[in-house]
Length: 619
Ligand code: M6R
Image (cartoon, rainbow, N blue to C red; front, side, top):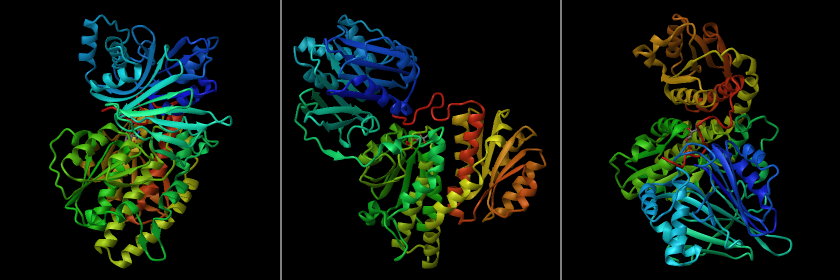
């Protein structure tokens, strides 16, 4: 994980770096640090354990001047989260300072070798190895920093996005990446000078410029104060930077009056889904226009099977996608935990389509899973939210969710966006294959069109959960139950509660209760049941009765107008009626809100829960 920011130009670097770190805190917040070169060419490093705000406090009364700097917010992998292990790390001489996102897998070997040559390490991190190695190469091969960095990176195994300051070259920043993202922002100022920004994503940059360059794997860049930018690969072959205009506003990144990003993102869902669907549903001609599919129709039509690789919430959305694609398009679909898939020797045929589903597009396990699939000849399709992300670029084709940036660590609007996108994909294939009757196809397309309004209705009828949530702060455990399309929603509800309230929760297919978990039920156990008046209604009512007779506390999600479950449950949340396959899009909303309010009642930091980060860029 970890977030990197950098700046070189005429402005004061420190405020830019700190603001950027705040925007990247979703990537980790175990410690933060900043490195600055002052006007007198001295290099200062300031670090603090904990969040960026702790760093800000720690530098009060210190010299934070300077127009060139790098900064880092850490999610600890090697070495505990303390000040010593915080970035930037100095080289032996103290001339170089480096920040890093990623993992250097062969760091132990390199460290031991360097120690033999007299290098003394101060931290337990894999990162310090990089800066020490670069300096060692520079000194022994008598080359400049750029060449030394190229050479050093060739010996490194693992993932890195780095930025380096050099006291002896105070007018430049060097940056490089492999398997961890790095974006360069380019801005022409009013006086005609060029300034450069660096970020792990575009969020620290967008306030200043929308002109960006995504550094590619094994590329290294040097930016200097004269506005020059040089990019080469590690063999020193010059690369031509592809400058792009980024379509993302700063407003999209702010909280917009909500106390937390998570709540904002829950309430954004109707609009986010409208945007996600926009232009993709042709109501007049009754068609689904998903460009990534249209361009590769044959791959999908001739697919022996679809394999979806994902993690966490994206895995839950993928399971719903499987149910829908199998039902609508009649293609077998397997949903794999990317972290398991990548380390098995899975059977993959060249006529398999492998879909990666990932909000961030940076999840290391998902990226590795598709790389494995690619090596076995499968066609790769990406469903990502973050534009230009690693997974989006590593796949043969794909589609973006277009639900806007998701900042809260707990995924909410990305989940509904993923379910919608997978439904669109299923419908697009079904249309081509004619595996759905026209009547059914029209019904589903028309229903999808009104889902954003139904989400809005659901939000309006369930918004005030704060006092209800107070009643559950005592709970040590929760059970979530659903059947069919709602089983993955039960899994998702349980995950949402676990990750932000730290209450243990389990999701089960409701009918599995009698095979063991029902033994857990007593008057202390809250059980959330998704019980829409659809397909398996009678069966889920029986499951509720079984829990009720064992004194479980039932919180049910029911269709508006339901009377039977209302009689049985301690509390009901209502959703409008919709087709079975779209119930997850509505049922998940009260669950997101319930988790949010329970977490708030317990005083948790919902946007930055402990031990987590938004993008899991380490395995
Ligand atoms: O960015 P991705 O969708 O690949 O992330 C996968 C999971 O890490 C993510 O969904 C995680 O489970 C969320 N924090 C859940 O809210």
